[in-house]
Amino acid sequence: MTKLQWAVIASAVGMFFLIYLGCETTPENIKALEKSRALAAESTDINTLLQDARSTLDNRASGSILALETELEKTPADSARAEVFKRLASKWYELGHPAISGYYAQQVAELAGGEEAWSIAGTTYTICVQQSQEQKTRDFCTGRAVQAFENAISLNPQETAHQVNLALAYASNPPPDNPMKGILMLRDLNQKDPDNVLVLNTLARLAIQTGQYPRAVERLERALSLEPDNSNTICLLAEAYRGSGETEKAEAFAGRCRSLQR
Image (tube, rainbow, N blue to C red):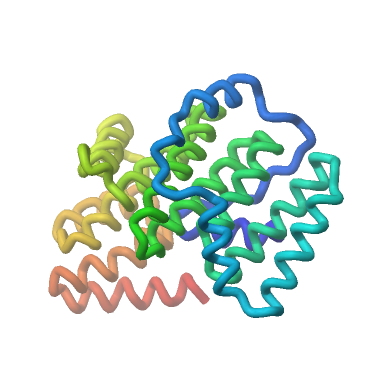
């Protein structure tokens, strides 16, 4: 992917990152963390997903993927392989298969070892969770998204955005034994840092999705008082006020939202 494409994928959940490139290997603590995670519970695997996806490709798309896979086989250096992995991730995303795109973004992160790369992988998997109709694919992508965001957090525990994205991964496909896990994580972040606008906006967005418009307005007005020019807050307020039936306020914020998006 180009740097812009990576940033566009990340923005789908409110994150804007440029992919971090480097020749360092994955830190030992991350390797140990990865090995300790139980991926055995996955209800499908990447080989099955690849096989199913390939069956949907036309000749042109199939040829593009095959060319990249052939290039990968001939590329021994990690730094060069990372670039091919990025192109594979970009191509599969373009073809509408975020689960496979996430897998190749994960390969980039395993080579680069940076928090931004892990966040990109997690974000791509989260898009898979939000878009997929098959539960086995949603479960696969949820587990991988959690793994990726936890890796990012282990590298930078102070970055709230990684913790927000981890909570969103759980909220997008809640664990059957703990359906409120993602929401509770976000509430905990809000209690620890009540002035964090990203957390307030995220909680408000989820409130809008569940029809809790007055609660969304309350959080967004708080966020607006902290950052009056935050475009996400302004656009969300248009939705929240519309849902609350306050048409005049909704139109006012919708106008501000449109002007910020030009």
